[in-house]
Structure formats: structure tokens, C-alpha cells
Image (tube, rainbow, N blue to C red; front, side):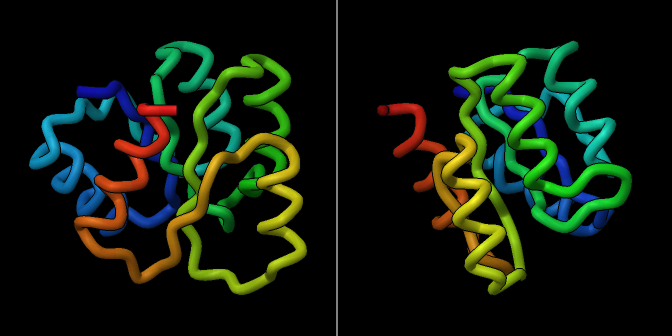
Length: 120
């Protein structure tokens, strides 16, 4: 069981992810609806994993990745995005995001990505 921060500006996506995590026996320690809140909640809760949307208000996913990795070089960040902007995705991966899940995602892809990340 991992402690996970969900960061997505969509209430519906956060709810679905929270349900998936619950079924997978993971704990949602906090939910952020914008990038600035995601960074602050990471610092407050020190989750084991962040599920991070790429396109968010206040701070985008790339900015969040950079700031979180600056704060904690061991952070485990999974990008969740509908974007096909490979340049931005690659920049996120270069700055420390560990993997990406494309929207629309399915139950198994989320849990498999978390499990794989925690095992490394």
C-alpha cells in the first residue's frame, strides 16, 4: 500500500483515480486541483507517489515536476495526460518524472504503473 497524491484539475478524474487507488489498497493522502497546490501538498504530506496531470492551472505539470524534484530528488512522479506533445512529455521525463499514463486510462494501467514504480 502506497501513500499517493493525486494532482488533476478535473474533479471527475480525481474521483476515478481515488476509486482505483482504493481498490488497489493504496491511500490517497491528498488531492490537488492545480499545480501550485500539488507542490505544497507534496511538501506537507511527502507521498510515495504523485499522479500528476500535465495540463493544470497556476503551474503546469512540467513546472510541478521541476519544483518537486528540486525539493525531493527521490520523488516518484507518474504523469497522466491526454496531451500528445512529445516535447513537453520528454522534458518532464528528463526532469524526473518516472513514467506516463495516457488518458483515457484504464484501471489496470494505473495500478500496474504504481506497482512497477514502487518496485524500482
